[in-house]
Length: 415
Ligand code: AMP
Image (cartoon, rainbow, N blue to C red; front, side, top):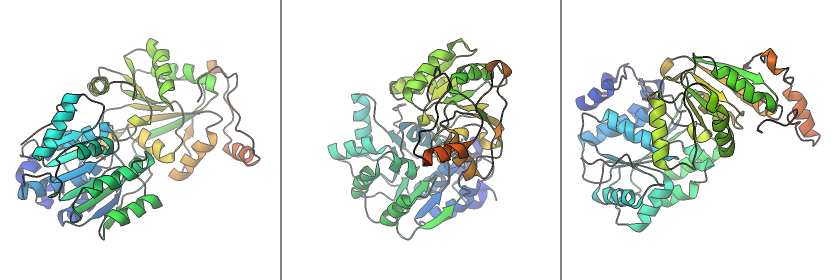
């Protein structure tokens, strides 16, 4: 199958091919015909599968064939980063077409607020928004979604995890009942199915191989004591093959500490967290994308939707708690069929969590020997930890205890 088979407008195809897309991914093959037919859709697909284009392409094509002067499509996404990336994909695909879009998210100044409000009042084809800012704008202004045709909820599971369910319902209260509703989610827990039942009308369902990391990712784990992590990461970063690296750590404070710790390693190292100004976050992402920054350290805020090519290594400095977070984190490398390495540090407390991740994937991750100069690590024995927990004990912690514990891009465009 090729993109020509979808009979998209020539200007859209031109944008698509100029972005380097050659053949549709499985989610695109399945979702595009359903969306083109105007049916509601519930799709289970992770980031990295090409899900964004799967809904954007048929929607943009529809807008091109039946342009309106109103707000046509609303895409709700959990984070400003994802919102901006969706908007950037619209920019790319729509480069040769006349489709207007705006990213709406908070954390910016009054001028941006005014620009966002103005764009919504004037009418723009596609609005990509985080829930909080959109509600604030809806409640403050003269915004008319009466002619809305498509509603997309992207990363719906993450939005519910972040507590946005009520906000989503409030927003939907502003939308016409007759519309196309499209919901994308990396997982399909019962709460997502309930939401889908409430907001979608007889939706088609698509399931794309859930919870399996891309085949090109070489996964490794080091079973360590906390106080071995620092020396281990410094040793790993001496490997110059790793020229673009993301390190995930559990909390914002740990991310900041790690940034200080790693200042001596070669290549620039920066932390990415929610205490930074939006403009600083955007600058850091630009440096990282432009390969002027070698190491980016962040929390799970980085794990979803961040779309940077050529990341050679992902390190989980702390093992993620949620198997889906693991898949999302390591999915930052080996994108678009390239190879990449994902290394996870597993301390004693995290052994049980990590064994759940292995169970979900259906295989064990290779355990790497710890470099001799760091001494020996703990045994990998998650079963023992499970038994200890069942007896009411706390999982044992680290030996020595010295280590860390665990746009407005002027994103406003008008036609
Ligand atoms: P997503 O799952 O939407 O986060 O997309 C993951 C990455 O794949 C993004 O960089 C897209 O630009 C890229 N992509 C999406 N569809 C295709 C395709 N058909 N061919 C090549 N790359 C694609």
